[in-house]
Amino acid sequence: MAKPVILSQHLPLRWLGVLPFFAFAFLFLILPTLYIVIGAFRTPQGGFTFDNIIGLNTPTILNAYWLSIKISFWSALLGCVIGFAMAAAITVGNTAKGLRNPLMTFSGVASNFAGVPLAFAFIATVGPAGIITLYLRTEFGINLRAYGWNLLSAWGLIVTYLFFQIPLMILIITPALDGLKREWREAAAILGATGPQYWRMIGFPILLPSILGTMALLFANAFGAVATAIALTGPQLNIAPILLFSQIRGDVLGNPNLGYALAFGMIVITGLANAVYIWLRARSERWLK
Amino acid sequence: MSRIFAWGALLTGITFFLLPLYGMTDFSLRMRRGVYSLDAYRAVLADPQFQATFGYSVIMALFTIAFGILLVVPTAYWVRLKMPELRPVVEFITLLPLVIPAIVIVFGYIRLYNTSSWLPLTGSAMGTNILLMFGYATLALPYMYRAVDTGLRTIDVGTLTEAAQSLGAGWGTILSRIILPNVLGAVLSGAFLTFAIVIGEFTMAALLNRPAFGPYMQILGANRAYEPSALAVIAFAITWACMGLIQLVTRFSKHERAKA
Image 1 (cartoon, each protein chain N blue to C red):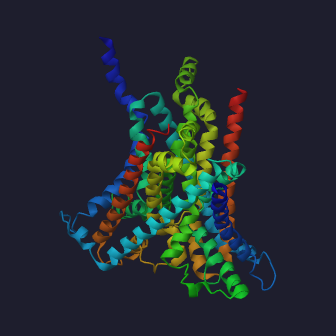
Image 2: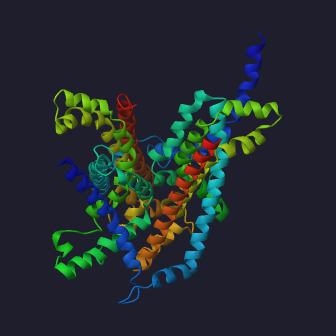
Image 3: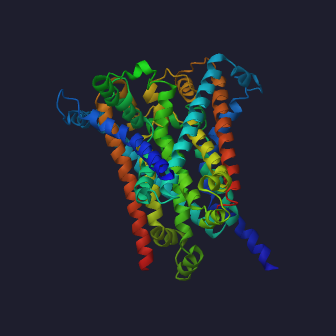
């Protein structure tokens, strides 16, 4: 009899403990995002409209999104492939286990070394007057520019992003590689499978959800990056985050609500990529637990 | 065959990692013609703008860390102790900053808290500083929460709380003298990561027009040749130091627990 009474007395007090967190999250995370999302569907007078979303259909904006998607995709794909190969080298097989700890530590550092300084490092190395660029030109007569290399371009951005994408892949995929049981390999060997066969038919299919999921995460990671791109190319390169940056600074699109729509599009893309990641991670946990 | 492949992948990757680090270091030492010198570092460190912006960012980082600890530790503790059913919701919210790009969040701030709004934070320098700190706290939330929550997992929150309560401790005492010391390693990990994030952050500070280290680096990069490389080396050293401290703290707290 008495119990429900006590419960109902305690219920509001119990909630008090999490109130600051929810208040903060609502005011400084959810509400600002909602404001952008709602703004994307509003006229300047406050009515409902699809005009802003339709307004995204201009060559400048579509090109910005498309270039962003391409850059994010390629940096995610290459980051995945290279990161996976490196993670595999330090885990499975007896190749370079001694390098495991240094590489993991370095990955922790490098995955956090992004933004403006990262751009500086690449400019100093393979930029127009970078150390490697000049060295190749003076010592070997190789002019990187003549081979189509330009750091201040989409491919320059992809290569620069790889500096944090590869380490992130290593950090995420190494535990998954550790989860491959030795018994599976032995069982396959007993049944007569060769190394490549084991990888093609057992190891790789088990890891595939993790790999694809991480790739989605890397994609979102690159898509939202602003600082590296601005420090590397200035405001010229037409990618979605830089366009949004210029829009916030000076309304370059000449329509504030179009800015909301542009930001909304970015949320949709990173949101989709993260949804794919969460879904695939749940799938990969079936085997790798 | 697979050994060659493994070594090939490792060497390629390591070369790729080392080249830019070598490049920025070498470049940063070349300010004086013909010889290696520390001129670029001297120029950077003597720049009053550097001192001002770096100091600003360090202070912002410290406030963000303090605020993050005050926000996250009680919440994670309370959720573990009293409201485990809320965990998925809280975890989901703490992961949102990884999904929503920082530039979108700060865009929302600018529109939501401008001078003509109900909470005109961007109206004054102090208000904008506070808003920026909240923004940084948001960016650090996923890391801080995960670190603290992992730390709480290793201790028996329920028993500790009951023991403290039976000795007459209130919530404040329990949190500050029982829970916090027990998860200090985890909290410090989160704090160092927060520091690394805040110190170089560019987007939020630039769009809120605050004189932080990130925008300063970007402006210097657009105007100077050698100083940016020196800044890159300094920034890399800071990141490395933060990560090193995290490892140290983690190892130390594991050691402590093993002894106990």
